[in-house]
Amino acid sequence: MTSYDDYKVGSHPFPRHDIDPAKKILDGEDSWLLKYSEAIFAAWLRDKCAIPYTELDTFTTNRKYGAGQQDPSIYQDILLEEEDKGKPEREGWYNVNWDIFSVAPKFKNVVVGMMENQEHDIVATAIDPMSGKEREEQKWDLWMKSLYGKDFQQIDQNLGIRREPDSFIPESYNELMIYEELGGFKLKKEYAIERGIDYTFYISDWPEIKRKMIHDILDNNCCCTKDYVDKYTARVKTRYVDPSRLIMQYSRHYNHRNSEWGGEIVPMKITDIRVVAPDIPETELRELAQKYQGTNNNPSITIWETDNENSGAGSLSYKYDDFWIDVLDLEIKSVDSNYKQYRTDQRGERHYYDEEFGYVKNTETRKTKVVNTKVVYRVKWIIGTKRLFDYGYQYDVPRPGKKEVELSYHLYKLPGRSMISLIQPNLDQIQLTWLKMQNAIAMSSPSGVAVEYTSLTNMTLGGKKMDPLEILTIKRGMGDIFYRATTHRGYVNSPNAGKPVQELDGGIGRSLEEFVRIFELNFNFIRDLSGINQIADASSPDPNQSVTGSKMAISATSNALKPIYASYVHV
Image 1 (cartoon, rainbow, N blue to C red):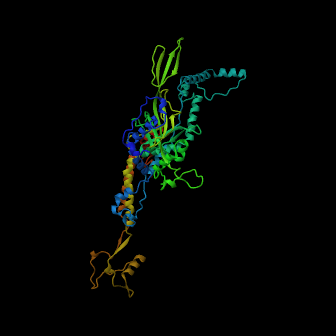
Image 2 (image 1 turned 180 degrees about the vertical axis):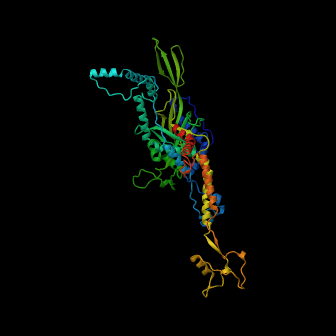
Image 3 (image 1 turned 30 degrees about the horizontal axis):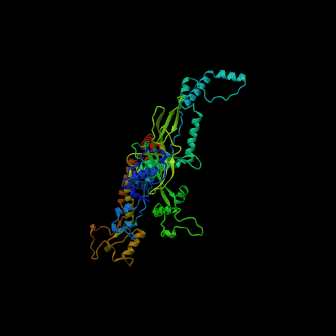
């Protein structure tokens, strides 16, 4: 086993492509595929890939902010003193609910909702010469029916032939051209391809994949899928790929169309590894489990000598059977050089023969030709080991041209910061304001009165001496107040002394208005940064807003979200 840190240092070069193709698919410590897998993994750990390894923490943080689940300790570090953290007392800041109050999920749902209502049909158009000829024949056949339709009907009537009438007959040449531009001359194979693609999206559950991709673009400015053939049903499908587990060669193109390799880290259970790689001994699988205990949600086993086997007579299972192990699933573009030798016989005919790699012989009757072919290799590597499985040539490779190949991974990565990353400071301010408002409410006093005590002492009502508290009880019950306006010597109290009982307002007072203004300010900042205005974000619209103004606001939001939707459409 080799740890992750060992791949961050040292030399892990990429092997050469100009070797014997037969040696590229050999197993062992010097395997070409193993060297390539280690080189790719080392490049990822050293931030030389499309999505750098050191950005994974940022990916996780952005996703938490986007879901409104960021760590509350961020705000505890700001509001609490170091010595107060973790105390059980409920004083001051301990009276608040530290749960996250976030509007980020709402804004994301608005974008997802807008884009879920938009979809595009894929149109297949054959461009080969034979299809073009067939389409031309359909067009001129329809034009002939337009010119001589009545004559054909008369002939059919005389011969007793009944034909189904055509759904459309152009009345002029211009109508014929318009009909052609609208795709009227559709070939049967084009219909079949379109229905096949629709079926592929259906069995792949594309609506769910679409939602996940839009969330990824909003959170981290990238999204990815992979095309594959189900090995059990032999059906073509596509699936979602988590960008945080993607390892792909860096490219200057947003769609990474020229990346030479790509793959993803796929967790696999040890029970599944036994099936696909039965030659791995149990001692090595146990070592793998020891390395991965406590990670990938795997439990810890205390004593491996006795606790690793399940109890019971004849038990064939181990306690680490359900351990998740990281496997790197890769695709690598390469160029295979095949040596061909053609010989000219006595009749002057040429015959081609496969020759040994690197063998060149050029004479009058024998010539060696090197045929270079672009191919894609597949390999699954148990990270940190020398073990490979399910490796060799990749099947069903997309070929945009006869001599070109594509990877099954489709990554689109926008430049700059994502929408969630841009609004994080405002989300922090909203949460801090929410906590401060809670604290202000918890620490505020209720409404009360201020009493000038001497004005209520020595009061006698109906021959009964009244205590000041009894007079306040009458005040609360009846609203009336009795007090003494003169001193014990009969002098009138100073008129500047004020009322004997003054009402005191409770609550947080003007602080509430300040909190509301801070909320509104940050909400407006989020709208400005995201491009989702108040008309589109499901807030209360302005009743004075005109219909035309509302349409313009919705159009402005759509323009701001076009790069996000364009990324999805491209994938």
